[in-house]
Length: 207
Image 1 (cartoon, one colour):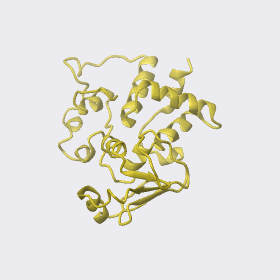
Image 2: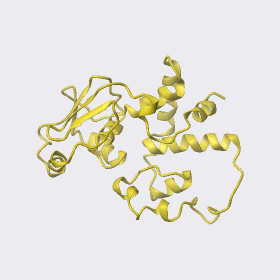
Image 3: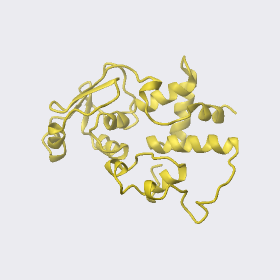
Image 4: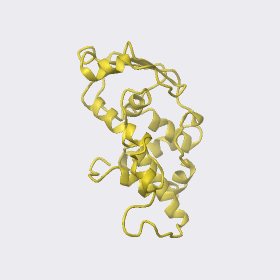
């Protein structure tokens, strides 16, 4: 995913669903997927019967693109989830949701996961008072995320301070005025709003 250089909107068209990779643009009439919801390429409008394997593969690719992870990382999440108690697919989605870059996005600080990943990479955040610049860092219940004091005065975060508290998953809270958020609980399946058929990914990897 890190080496993808083409237009991100092509990924939404390829997967046949909005992946919300371009932030606010995805919610406007300028979204290319709304204008032409067909697969890219000269054969995009043709209908082809997709095999069960093909459906499973597309579902995996869709989720990888939503969260912006590469194949090796994604496989590692599956294996970690499979070793945990509970339902493998739900465990996997919970781990993906708990990535620090995704949490920053869910709190409304970043307009997209890509922007949130960049903010984390640049070392703008502290987790429980310690600097964390690894987007894949997995947060835990009770963790407190704050913007570094030395960064809180720049224009980007000054604008965040004035915004209204956005609707967000019930497992998170964020105070814009304080630039502080907290992980209230671990995310459950019904907290994840993405239209994902995680059982298909589990079936693909378990073959």
